[in-house]
Amino acid sequence: MRMLLIIISVIGLILTILPSLLVFNGVIEIKTHYLLMTVGMVFWFVSAPFWMKSKSLEEEEA
Image (cartoon, rainbow, N blue to C red; front, side, top):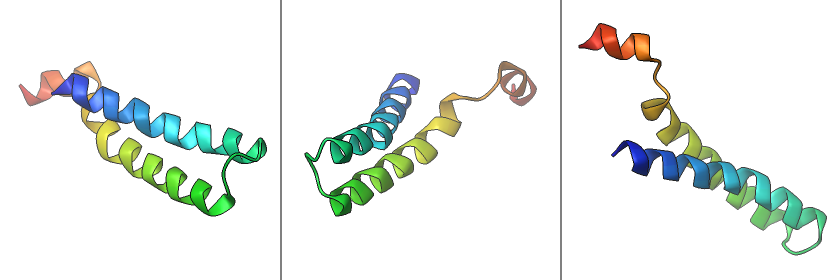
């Protein structure tokens, strides 16, 4: 499960960086850029907190 969350987080980060480069090079339009950036943001903020917990927090929960 943790590996799936990491993969989703990485996809989210890619979707926040790659569209900017594509707009800069004229490959995609700005509206597509906004959509991809929003999807990437949601992917990152939904998945990252669950696998980025510190070890001290995990020890307190156990």
